[in-house]
Every structure is written in C-alpha cells, then in structure tokens.
Image (cartoon, rainbow, N blue to C red):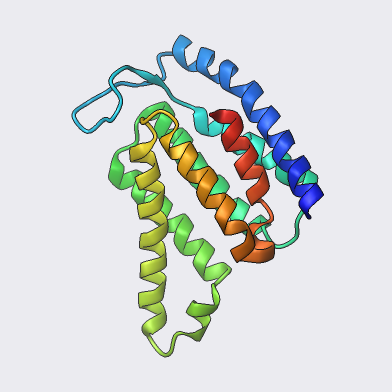
Length: 186
C-alpha cells in the first residue's frame, strides 16, 4: 500500500499541477472569478475551477491504486464536486446548493451506512442520519467559505487527509491521491 500510495500521490500531484495553469487561463479568459465581497477573505478576484484540478488528479491517482470499497465514496464526492462546479460556473443560490449536497449526503449514508447508523436503536437512526447529512453539508460549505484564503483550505485538506490515513483503513485508500492532487494544486 505504501508504494502504491506514493505512486498514486505522485501521479495525482503531477496531473493537478499540470492542470492548474490551464484552468487559471481558462477561468480568467471567461471571467470565472470569485470577486471579493463583504464575506470574502481575499482582496483581489481569484480564478475559480481549482477543484477541477484536485478532483481529476485524485481520480487519476485512485485509478492507479484501484482500491476496493471506495467507489461509493468517490461517487458521492463526484456528485458533491459537480454541485461545486455548477456553482463555480453559475453562482448557485445557497439553498439550491445545500439541498443538492444534502441529497447526495443522505444517499451516501443510506446506501452505505456507517456502523453507528446500523446500530442506532428505533427511530434514533433518523437523528444519526440528520447529523451525518448536516456534518457533510456543513463541512463542504466551510471549505467553500475558506477557499479564498491562499493555500489555507488546501493545507487543511492535506494535513487532515494525512492524519486520517491510519485511522480509516481501506476506506481511506484514496487519501494518498487526494493529498498529492491537493499539493499539486497548491
């Protein structure tokens, strides 16, 4: 796993790093910029679409590893990413974006339930589901709010993914690719 993870991370790094300048040029040429407002942490317009480089790099790295058991998680990530891409391209209203994210999160949790959901007695599973959906949507949007701070979100993602590797076992087989792709983006 270690050698495969290093290869996957390295390849993801190269792919994301190669895509970033192309995506910046594309975004600037089409005015796909995040223009600062009162809630922004950045002061100058920032090109959007960085998530494309991270996502494509991660997928390429995961394809090298071909781990079992992570595809449902990657499908959910792809759907959440698609919502973010649509938001980058068209400025979705927050309620529309949050509703789409909640549907994806609920689908992931219901179709691939964590042990705590299966063990919840009686109607308590509804509370566990609601908390899980809230957590996924809140975390997705917290990262979205932070992404205007140069390198902050990417740095947080790399550090968190690195420390998650020993904790999540096979489910985290995609993490070396995510680390590489995010570092390549930075």
